Amino acid sequence: MTALFPGETFRFPVRVYYEDTDAAGVVYYANYLKFMERARTEWLSAKGFEIEVLEREHRIAFAVRRVEIEYLRPARLGDRLEVSFTVVEGRRASLVADQEIRRGAETLTRARITVACLDSANWRPSRIPAALLPHTENPA
Image (cartoon, rainbow, N blue to C red; front, side, top):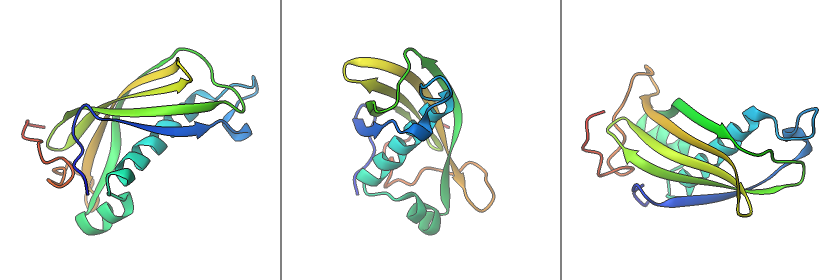
C-alpha cells in the first residue's frame, strides 16, 4: 500500500454514455459529481486501499462534507474525459482535494472537495488511518 501524499495527481478516464446526458444532450450537472466519485474510488484502489476493506477492517467510511464546483463547459454524448484528483491538504479526520474534468486540453469542470473520514459504526469523525495519510498531524 502507498501513502496518499498531497500534491500527487491521479487521472482517471471516463466516457460519456447516453445515460449520463439530459434532454439537452449534455451531461446532467449531478453526473459530474459521480465522475469525480469514481475517480476518488479508483485513486484509493490504485494506492492499495479498497473502500469495502477499509470499512470492514478499519470501520471507516468516507463521506463528502463540502463541494465547491464550477461548471465551465458541457460534456456531450461520446466524449472521452479525464477526471483528475489531487490532495491539497490532509488532516486528522478529513482531506481537501482539487478535482477537474477535462476533454483533451479543455477544462470542463473544477471542484474543491472536502472528504471526511467517519467511524462507520456511529458516523462520527474518525482519524484517517496512519497507513493512508501518515503525515496528518494538523488538527482536524
